[in-house]
Image: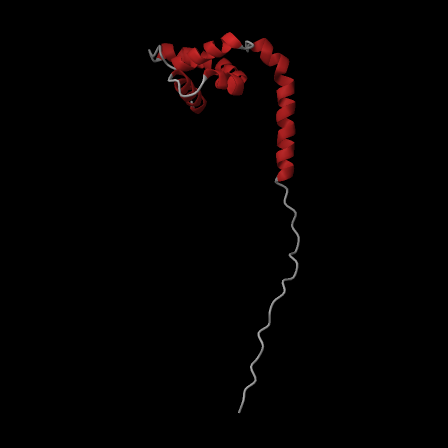
Length: 122
């Protein structure tokens, strides 16, 4: 449900005019369409079972706007691009795993100042 709430917040910001639609299309268009492919069947079921016909209505509106200007994302689109996306994510994970590798070495000995003893005068 967190993902649905995220997209609902984005849709509300666009609908209220706080965020330009063009920015969402450029930055999140494909991701929004992909998530809607996953969310829409469950959302349709939720609307019927809970008698809430307006559940995620703003997300549905936003997807409609984004679909009007860019490539449509459906099963064929996902199937065509899935292998490339998986390879890209695997490469990113490999890179991030390499960055978290920590080399452990003994620190160089620190120079320590030894205090001088005062001569006692008798």
